Amino acid sequence: NAGVTQTPKFQVLKTGQSMTLQCAQDMNHNSMYWYRQDPGMGLRLIYYSASEGTTDKGEVPNGYNVSRLNKREFSLRLESAAPSQTSVYFCASSYTGNQPQHFGDGTRLSIL
Amino acid sequence: EDQVTQSPEALRLQEGESSSLNCSYTVSGLRGLFWYRQDPGKGPEFLFTLYSAGEEKEKERLKATLTKKESFLHITAPKPEDSATYLCAVQANQAGTALIFGKGTTLSVSS
Image (cartoon, rainbow over all chains, first blue to last red; front, side, top):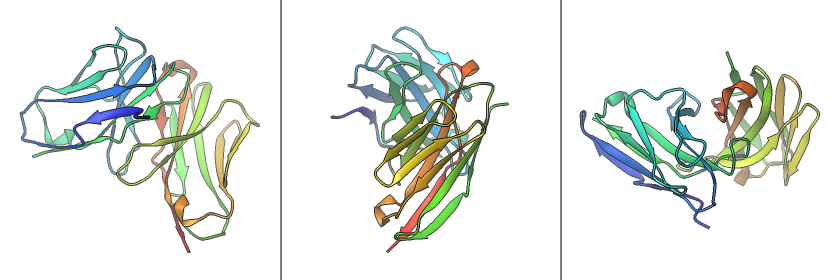
C-alpha cells in the first residue's frame, strides 16, 4: 500500500540550479497536485493535473513547471532555483477532482 | 476572496479533556469541506469530507460537523496519540478542483 511516493525526501540546492521533484501514485487516481507548505502559511497549490494529458496553474505557479508523464506520475521542475522556493513540497492525488486528496510525505527542499 | 480560518492556532489538553477545533470559511459556493491530520515530518492524512450544512461524520474520538459558515472538529476524551496538527480545507464551486487550506490547529495532549 504505497499510495503516493515522492522522491527525493530531502534536497539542498544552490541558487540557480535546476531540479525535478518526482511523484508517483499507485491508486489509479485521475487527478494529481503539487503543493508547497511554508511556516505560518497553509498549503498552497502550485499546479495540478485534472486528468492525464492536462495541467493547470494553481495559486503560486511562478518559477515552476510540471509534467504529467502518464496516469501514475506527475513531476515538478524548478528551472532556476531561488531561496524563496525553500519549502516542503507535497504531491497529492485523487480519483476525481471532487474526491478527497491523498498526500505523499513530502520533499524538504532548501535553496542556499 | 475564498478564505479559511482555523482557531485556535494551538491547543493543549490533558488526556480525557474534550474540546473542539474551529474552521470558519467564506467561499463562493461550497462544494466540500475536508479535515486532515498532519504529524510532524509527514504529509496530511485524510480524515473526513462534509458536503452540506447539518452533516456530521465520526471516526473513533473525532466528530466533524458543518454549518453554512463553519465546521467543528470535536475531540472526545483525547489521548496523547491524538497530538497532531489538524488542517481544514474547502473546495469552492468556482475554484475547479483546488483546495483552499487553513493554517491548521496544533493539538498537544498530555497524559
